[in-house]
Image (cartoon, rainbow, N blue to C red; front, side, top):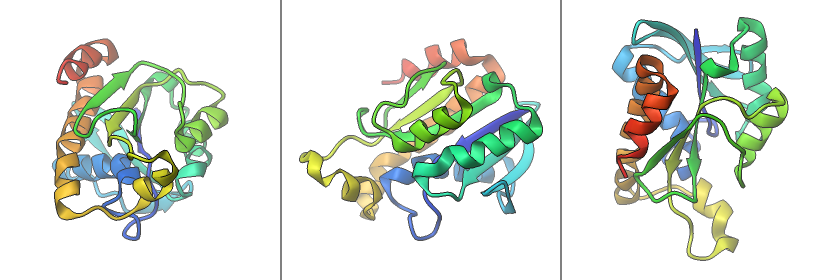
Amino acid sequence: MYLIAGLGNPEPEYSYTRHNMGFDVINKLSEKYEIEVKKNGFESLYGNGMIGGEKVILCKPQTFMNLSGNAIIKFVNYYKIDLSKLIVIYDDIDIEPGVVKVRKKGGAGTHNGMKSVISNLNSSEFPHVRIGTGSPINKSDLIEYVIGKLSKDEYNNLCKGIDIGAEAVEAIIEKGIDNAMNIINAKT
């Protein structure tokens, strides 16, 4: 069983923000595979279904971004998820908008949600799907940049990354992490 966790802040208040790219990928997968993400538990909204012949849980932690790990650890412990089958999807300001990078493992960088996940799991040995948002011109505007509402044009520019993020999850499940990295990371 795979746990596919998109990081973000509760919707609809934080919908259409750069920080909710992880939620947006979960929403895309939910729609495509008809997996309702409406169950409430483990400090998350989640749903169970199938992708590529594998059982999956689609998860949107409701803890707010900086405490995402508090929810994810509950799923990992309860369902005894092997960390190689935990896929965490999140926004990354160090990647250009519309670009997606898949990593087999890795640190959190400056991302507080990932810091929480890694801290709670006491490991960074799980697949990461990083959705590029680009960074603000002025770093002091970072908080407003990631949680501020996007215009329709700004959001549409990020939709390519959301689509590729969903492809990345499918590729990890169906072809394995190494093949997924080769396929997705070459799309830039």
